[in-house]
Amino acid sequence: MTSSTSEMKQWMKTLNLTEAAHILEESLLDAQAKDWSCGRFLQHLLRYELQKRDEKQRAKRMKWAAFPFIKSLDDFRLEEQQSLSKRQMEQLRGLLWLEHTYNIILLGPPGTGKTHLSIGLGIEALEKGRRVSFVAMDTLVHLLKTQGIARTSQVRMRRILDSDLVIIDDLMFMAMDKSESNLFFQFVNKLYSQVSIILTSNKGPEERGELLGDPVITTAILDRILHKSEVIKLSGDSFRLKHRETIFGDF
Image 1 (tube, one colour):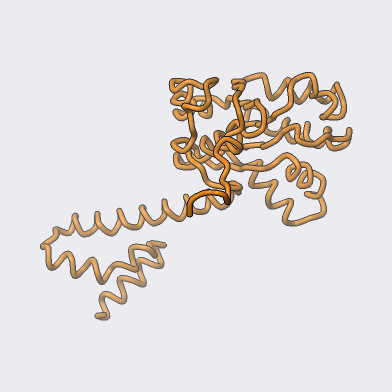
Image 2 (tube, rainbow, N blue to C red; image 1 turned 180 degrees about the vertical axis):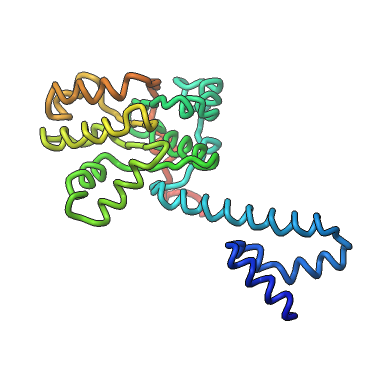
C-alpha cells in the first residue's frame, strides 16, 4: 500500500466511509485495469458504501424485530386458507394500510397461519425500511410490569414504542388482572394513531371482557385498536397438524 493510498483510507474512515475504505486498494486496481473514469470510480465506491450500510441497517432491524422464526409471505400456503383471497393478500403485501396507520386483526383457531402471516407482513415492512417489533402477549405483560425496575425491559419497551409496526401475538392467550389490563391500556394508548398494530388471537369477542380483566378497560382498549382496523378471520384445519412430520416414514 502506497502512502497516498493509506492516507486516502484514513480520510475515508474519518468521513465515516469505512466500508468503501475496505475496498479502496482493490477498486484502484480495477479502475486501472478497466480504465474507469474518475466518476465511474467514485460511483463504485459510493454504491458499495451505501449497499453495506443498507445491509447493516436491515440486519439491525431484523435483530430488533425479535421474530420467533422467519417465514415470508411467499411461504404462506394461501391455497389452503380459503378465507383469504389472493387479491387481499396482495393488498396486505402492498402495506398501504401501514402508511395510513391502520391495524390488522388476525382471528382464527390455532394453526391457521395467524403468526406466520403477521411475521410475513412484518418482514415486508422491514424490507421497506420500517422498524418492526414482534412480542408475544405474555412477554409484553412481563415487560410492562418490569420496565420500571429492569434495564433490559426498559430497552425492549423503548424499541417497541419507537417502531412503525408492532405485532402482538396471542392477544388473549392469558387472562389479565385489572392492574395488567390497565398497563396494557396505557401501552395501546401510546401507540394509538402513531403506530400500526397487528394482533393475533384465537379468542372470540364474547371472551374479551373475561380475559382482559375489566369491562371498562376492555372497551377502551378495543375502541382504540378497532378504530382504524381490518379484521381478518382465518379458518380451516391446523397447518401444523396437516403438515406434521412423523418418524414413521421413509428415510
